[in-house]
Structure formats: C-alpha cells, structure tokens
Image (cartoon, rainbow, N blue to C red):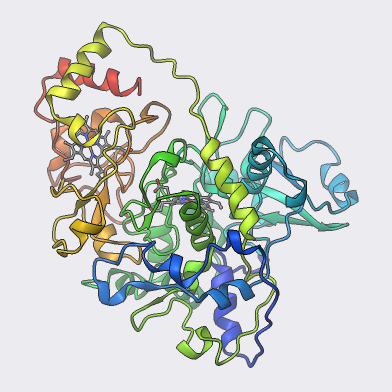
Length: 510
Ligand code: HEC
Ligand code: HEC
C-alpha cells in the first residue's frame, strides 16, 4: 500500500500547519553568517519585492529574527537516481554502505571557481527528503516513468532527483533541488543545467498523490496556490471541486511549466531559463523580485526555497499562522524540515547561477537569418527585445492593471500592455499586475513559450489562428478545456509565410 505523502513544496507546508496546532517552543539557533552577508534584514527586504497587483494583499515576509532562528541546511553528498531498468546491479546495497559525507565547507572555498563548483553541488542538492513531490516508491516504479513520460539521460539517469545519505544505511529520495525544475534533458540526451527545465513535475506530483485523501489534496492545493482576495477566487473554486478534478488540474501542466508555490496550476508559469539571468533586472514572470545585485538573487533563492510559505498576505496566511506566531510571541516548534540555506550557501548557488553559459548554438547566421534580423528591427521587436540581451529589462502592464503613479519613478516600466492572459499576474500570490519583457536568448534550445507556456513552437507564436476561441494551444491548455485563444502579443502575426520563416530562423540564432 502506498504510504501517503503530503507532498509538494508541499508536505513541508502541511507539516508546519500541523505543528502550529500543537503547543510549543521557539528554538533560537545562532545566525548562520557574518554581518557582511546578512541578506534578510528589515532594511533590505523593504523595497526588494514589488507590491502585488492588489497592494492590500502584498506579501509580508517573516522578520529578520524569525528568519535567522531557522536552522541552516546540512549539505550531504548525493547520488544519481536511475530508471529501474538502468540501475547498476547492487546499487541500492552499495548506497546503504556509504558513509554520510558533508560536502559544503565554506572555509575551504578560496577562489571564484571553488565557489562556483560548490554552488553547482548545492544547485543539485535536494532540500526535501520527505517525499515533497515524489518519493522512493515512484522512482523505483517503471509505471511512474511511463506515466509521466520522464526524460532520462543516455545512462538511464533521471536527473531531477537524487539519493541522499544523511546516515549510513539510510538512503532517502531527495526532492526540490534547483536542478529538479531547472534542468533540461534534450531529445539527444544532453543535459543543460539551468535551462528551462523539463521535469514533468506537476504530473509526477499528481501521480504521487493519486491515492491521497480528498481533504489532503484540497488542503495542500490551498497552501500552494490559495489567493482568496483574487477576483473570482479561482483557487477556492478549484479546491471546491472533486479530487479527480483537482488532480486533473495538476496533470494539465506540461513539462516546461510548473505550479510553483504562490503561482497556479490554472495559469502555471513557464519555467525560466536561468542561463543569462545574471543580466535580468526582474525575477519571476511578473517581476516580483527585483534583481539589482547578487544579494537580491540570494534573497530570491531563500524566499523561493520555502520562506514564502511563511509570508502573510493581508488577512490570509498560506499555513494559517497567526501574527503572534510570526512575531514569535506565541511559539511554533520547528521540525527538521523547516530550515533555510545559510547565507554562504546562498552565495555559492548564486555564483553558480551567474556562471551559467549557453550551449554552442548550431544555428549559424546566413542569408535567411540576415533577412530575419532586418525584419526583427522593422517590426519593432527591438524596442522591447533589445539586443544584446534581447530584452529591454522592463515591465509591461497586463490588461486590467492600472499603474500606480509612484511606480513610474521606482521601476522600469514600458507602458504598453501586450495583451496576453492577465490571470497569473492579477490572480496569484506572485502577481504584480505586470509581465516583464523576456529575453529571447536561447529560444532554440527551449520551449514552450509565453509566460504561461501555451505555445510549443515559434511558428505557433506567429500564427494568427491562436487569437481565435477555437484554437487548440500546442502546450499548456488547461484541465477540461478543449480549445481557447492564446491572445495578445500580436507582433509579426501579419507577416507573410516567407518573412515568418526568416524571422524564426533569426530567432533561432539568438
Ligand atoms: C519546484 C520547482 C522549482 C525549484 C525546486 C526551483 N525553482 Fe526556480 N523557478 C521555478 C519556476 C516555476 C519559476 C518561475 C516562477 C514565476 O515566474 O512565477 C522559477 C523562477 C526562478 C528564478 C527567476 C528567474 C526569472 O527569470 O524570472 C530564479 C532565479 C530561480 N527560479 C532560481 C532557482 C534556484 C537557484 C533554485 C534552487 C535554490 C530554484 N530556482 C528552485 C521552479 C523551481
Ligand atoms: C511592446 C513590447 C514587445 C514587442 C514590440 C515585442 N515583444 Fe515579444 N514579448 C513581449 C512580452 C511582454 C512578452 C511576454 C508575454 C507573455 O508571456 O505574456 C514577449 C514574449 C515574446 C516571446 C516568447 C518568449 C518566451 O520565452 O516565451 C517571443 C518569441 C517574442 N516575444 C518575440 C517577439 C518578436 C519576434 C517580436 C516582433 C515581431 C516581438 N516579440 C515584439 C514584449 C514585446
């Protein structure tokens, strides 16, 4: 019988919810880093994130003292997970013989290269071993791989999860490394770290919780996506449905997109390409996190590797924590799963992310791409997708969002709505009312496209048929939906077929 895991970014959240109903004591541990590396302070958090589209519900993060009272993560050596048909003989027995090895020791890091190497290891280090998304049961089952159409490397490795050995004889399946969502396996088996990931994560999650009680499925879905203040409250409408309907919503998210906590499985964000993110001024589709320096990147990582579950949104708290608990006036007991990266660990990961380089592009410039380049300028694409970054690094307002006057002074705003679906940015806990202008670098090695991953190919982006209600989106469609328009971003739609080919050929060289 399947042991029930409350999963997701997911089980952690639920565990916290349970703790809070118990009585308890707040254990203050020592801060993890020296003052020069203190990324979570009232001052630095003040204007780091944008307000939400409805500012009355803007996120309020936990305080500095709360943050630094969380224990820091211990980083153990990890091992690859193989498809059952490819696992070397005796591998599990061998893993049981391994001694635990602590592999992150900041005192030993001297050069930039040392930090990047340590950061890469941390990038692949799972922060959860409680079956947050999938468990040992899934990765040892052939059915799971078939069901999810799981990409594998030529060696038969499933590169999105790792085995962790925290004690000799204890071999745990680890989830939620950066690499779980930010690794791409190409059709030829090449592994691209940091590129738009293609772990079929929500499908895998749906499989893992297929036998979970209905009540738990509802609760976890609210913890992950609840945004009761949003117009029409789509997530409460979802959780009022049957278990089968909720699971169908997870299943509907294609690889290349992921319902990260605070976003949605109804309007899931495309997984961003982290190669080149060093130069981007806003993080997340709506630009929620500003990115002015490496410390902002560290804050973003800390926040997204679970701290945002502790944010308060107006009168809503994802885990149901009270103000007294968050102010440490009423205690909460932390179990081992509620923890954080140390500031040095965050620095190492960020340095690795900054070091990411694109793979060599096989699409070389030629007469056709040169013609495409001219069209790219003529059609005005350059205004927003400005070389060399192929983004002007600005925010565009979504339809239905009225830009508050003070935003013009604070943020880089290009005041034209491109008219794409506004749901993610108006109705989720990460929605700011804007969509940032994405970079077009690396389009050739990744997809699907648009903030909601609706379109599989560049031809689809330039296909006017997508504006009609009878269109069938080629990537994310949505549960129970047969056809719908993919509106907005009408640039280049009126070009003739030959010009479109030239434009696409050019885009594939970026
Ligand atoms: C469970 C999947 C998952 C995990 C684990 C994960 N990410 Fe992400 N990440 C996403 C998704 C999905 C987004 C897009 C979120 C959005 O736009 O709302 C994202 C966004 C980002 C962004 C913003 C980039 C941009 O251009 O907007 C950065 C940076 C990032 N992740 C880095 C990391 C790092 C580093 C780790 C590990 C410490 C990590 N992520 C772990 C899924 C994940
Ligand atoms: C007014 C600014 C603007 C102009 C002009 C513009 N774009 Fe965009 N582009 C955007 C924004 C904003 C998005 C993100 C929209 C979304 O996903 O909701 C985007 C997304 C894209 C994407 C999808 C990228 C991805 O990773 O998903 C492609 C491809 C693209 N644009 C190509 C073009 C081309 C080609 C032109 C010219 C024919 C063009 N754009 C003109 C603002 C613009």
